[in-house]
Structures are given as structure tokens and as C-alpha cells.
Length: 115
Length: 115
Image (tube, rainbow over all chains, first blue to last red; front, side):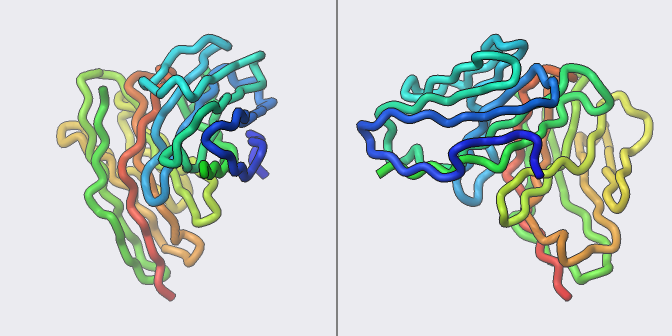
């Protein structure tokens, strides 16, 4: 079982809806990530939070809004999405020290379909 | 930004044989980390192996080893004694500096193990 929990596992939404993806980890990791993965493509980095502060924003459209309420939680708020935003959204976390710098622990993903 | 290249979209290997998956990278940073991840059809991303740019020895983790040739900027994954469960997508990834939290992925190689 993964130690990074993502909810919901599946989400279908219309272009005018507002929804949120949630991610939780209790490994004490202080870096948390959102990646977007289209079918048969690699994960693309979207956002990174380090110590609850946004450290990387890969020029993601403003219809995606990340939030890190505390060190264990990461949200991705979705509003006015387009059909091309349909993808698997992966949350990950990593330590800020240790044997394998940057080793990512991934959740199982939230599969988003925008109608 | 770092660039990771995987030139093999698909590879086939006979069960119990060894296989090498290629990865080349480009970066101007002297200190960086290289990773391999496995993604089975179920979708979860699984960490396999890590190589730091200053590590003197090639990394090994069980049946996985990393053939690191720094001058050639290559970090090939070698899987020995392939098993049917090794059939998956394999991604090479890179972090520009240890704990920089900017992990980016190559295009991936789909490995199929034949019985």
C-alpha cells in the first residue's frame, strides 16, 4: 500500500465545475509535488511545495490552484478546466535529507476527466 | 533546465535474460541525482534506483544496476534475470541538485518480458 493517499481516485467534471484533488502523507516529508500525466507520456512537473511554501510553479494555467494547508496535506483546486486537462494527476512527497536525495513517494493518482 | 532522453520507446526481453534500458541526460549543474522509476499498468510509480553525480561506484539494488558513465552523460538501467512482473513502463528521471525538488522525467521505455 502506498503511503501517499490521493482522493478521489476518479473524478468527472464539467468545464464550469469547481472541484479539488487531495493528497495526504504521514511520512514527515517536507516536500510535496503535483505531476500531470497524459496517457503514454511521462509525468510532467506542475507544482512543488517545500516546507509548505510554493517553490516551483511550472507556468501552469491559473485554472489549477495548489494549496498546502500543512506539512501533511496538499490540495489541487480545479476551476473552469478544459477537456485537454483530462489526465492522471499524481501527488508525490520526498524527504529533505537522507540516503536518496529526492526519492519520490507517489500516490496512486487521481484520474480526471473533463467533459 | 535539465534534459533527459530515452530513445527506446519499447523493448522486448526473454524471461530470465538481462536487458539494458538507455538514458542520456544533459545538465550544467556539477551536482545532480539520477533516478529510475517503474510504472506498471496499474499506474503507481515505483522507485528503483538512485545514482548521485559524485558517487564513485555504480548503484545496485537487487536485480537492478545503473551503468553510470558521467563523461558520456548516460545512466543506463540494467535489469538482470528478467521476470514477467518486470513488464512495465520505465522512466529515467533527474534532479538538478540534491534536494532541489525539481525531478523531471524522460519519455519512458515500455519493457515487455516474454515467457
